Amino acid sequence: MKSNNHYEIAFREFLRQKKIPYVQVDESHRSAFAQVKIKSFDFIVYPNDKRNLLVDVKGRKAKPAKKGDWLFDPWVGREDIDALEVWQKVFGEEFSACFIFAFWLSDNNSVSLFEPFEFCDRYYRFSMIYLDDYRAYIKTRSEKWNTITIPRAVFSELAIDVNQLLP
Image 1 (tube, rainbow, N blue to C red):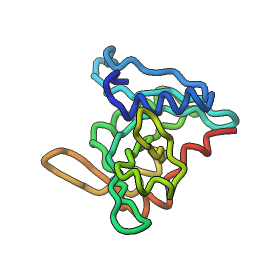
Image 2 (image 1 turned 45 degrees about the vertical axis):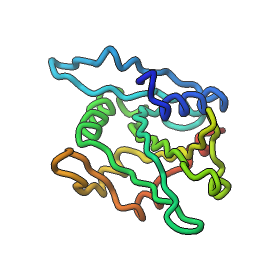
Image 3 (image 1 turned 90 degrees about the vertical axis):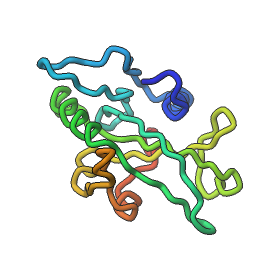
């Protein structure tokens, strides 16, 4: 985890306040696994009565599109997919890799449409999508930046509100 990333800090605070057990991964010790450098994930999360999670937090600024609607852009780097696939295999069947999209709700007038998490005068919405679900729908977002995404409608259908991690 990067200590200056407000999205990751907000998610860590969410876990702490909700008393969800977690381990924060120190990204300064990037792993070399089988002589290959692998991008780190951010947290190991232990939700009660659910599979343990290998979490890669992706911070995005959400923008209001029209009255009552928001634009949530669920893009990631190809390296993120590749790394999480490796980690999921390394940790085994008791763990599922996932992305937590930490959407910063930049328009404070519209946050009442959700149950936002407030932290440091910002409002966030945390949505989780399992790596396996995400991977099934990927399409190229940018060849130049080596990024991929999934259709917003698919994301809306498959993403889970992180509050559902609570017992």
